[in-house]
Amino acid sequence: MKSKKIELDMSPEAIGLRLKTVSELRRATLTLAKSDVARAIRKKNPNNPISKRVALALGEISPGEEVESKI
View 1 (cartoon, rainbow, N blue to C red):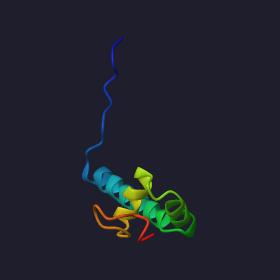
View 2: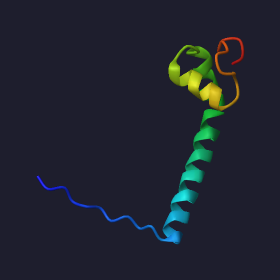
View 3: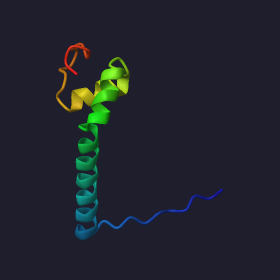
């Protein structure tokens, strides 16, 4: 089976648009992660690896710190 080559627009405008989109998605994701619902989920599941990663990204815990004491 032959694979089809995808052409990627590398013009400055296209790159700028992709960077803007990524920035907006990052901001939206962090806003959702800071919500009360997300905080409650992290508090309910403090030892879940994803909960730990989000808490670390938000600065709620330090690397190697116990999760339950901070959230």
